Length: 184
Image (cartoon, rainbow, N blue to C red):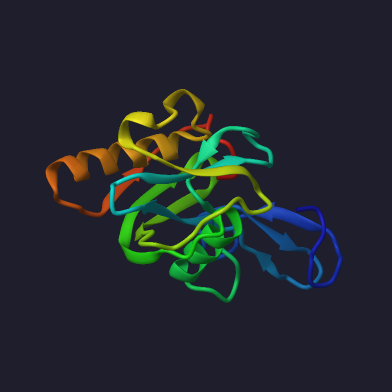
């Protein structure tokens, strides 16, 4: 950040008094500009036959590859609301949330993924504006070589293990993967 969003004056990157990290600080009004990680919220949607709802991306990065319906959380919404909104926007589905299922922190790109396990029931689905195609995949049909992100791959592995064991738990992982793209 070169200029203050409060007054427009120049900023300097330095450690504020009482802090331990460099921040952008306005040299004129002393506003400290904090930068925090982005939260990616979404759903791991399964139907009664344990098929998984995936969306083929119509946007960059990773155009044309398959992903879970997820995206950036907006101000003024809960994580659950963001997960459901993103699922509607990308897959035109309105699943029933079960539980928070996966939390993955990727500090190298300043993102935290929070994915809910959700059930499709008899809800219809279709492609939203950010998806070329949306469909249900059985476990043996998952397009592993065409998945957009490592977080999606890891989440689907967790789901398969949990479906096989019949025990669902919260999966938490800290990753440092500088190859992960900046957008689910």
